[in-house]
Image (tube, rainbow, N blue to C red):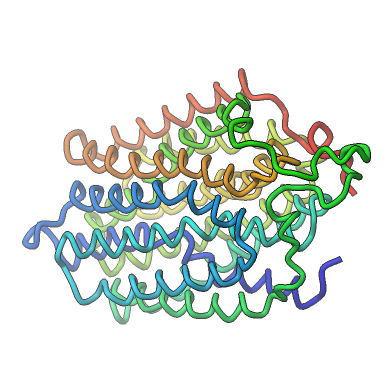
Length: 416
């Protein structure tokens, strides 16, 4: 059983890393368009290009980051170094409008951000073990969403007074607080054997000891279900990643930058508040209900959200539609590491597999920003949102027809 200090440390770590791990996202788009604008060469297409470049940098870092986490015997130190890198990249942005400097700082933040998801999942698995992993991941995601909601609420209030630049300072402060939270988690409670997806005894494989050593990476690459899941993650992020930044850009055109920053922050608060109970419910019930039907809900809601955006550009309508993100993203965040853990249990490659699949989802996110930015310039916002909706619908059909159930009962034995 993990100690009270470890549990509270994980809570604080997920709370403070919430905004840090996700990056500046829509805030960066609002800031560059409003504070820099066409006079300095910034429009939806150039913003999309910067986000694509950063996404590709993070993409290339995903699999090496997972392998690094698998091999590491000091995971907290890696998290701290990544948080410092994000802090420096955020502090630099208000002082430059140069395209290449902005792209470089965002690329650095994306590379650092690639560390956080596998590191947090590995640290969690190493502390609580596989039997309690699904429930604890749900709690992690609940605190992650609480952190996002709190940060967005602060941004909404302070942006009115100080403008969109305030978000950069807030991000840096949160990154520093996450370092303190990481130091609060007792390093000795992190079992590195369990953290990489290996059983620490033979109990889980009938006492045969078959999971006592990691399998080859080639075995993972030959796992068709794992590869299919990577494709589905790619489609989810290809559809989802650009929706909120595009909403922020649309609001900037409709109501202006100060109000847009405040409104988009309120959108995030509302969605994150929805995600908290969703994540807790998924963590508590996913093993009993099955992973597949819950994941199908995530894809279905994402497709619906994209189809509803073009109905109106009224800020209150866009706000209402954005709350649906709380369901889709809440499910995805709570189930992604659980499905990967199920598919790789006993291989010793849990984190590199997370990284490899995160590479696929990172590619989807990077292409989403560039694709949507270009489509907005060429065809307008409604066409862009409907295209994103169609991608999500395709993911729903593929998951329904081709993806098997990956729940605990078929992968890791009965829940406790």
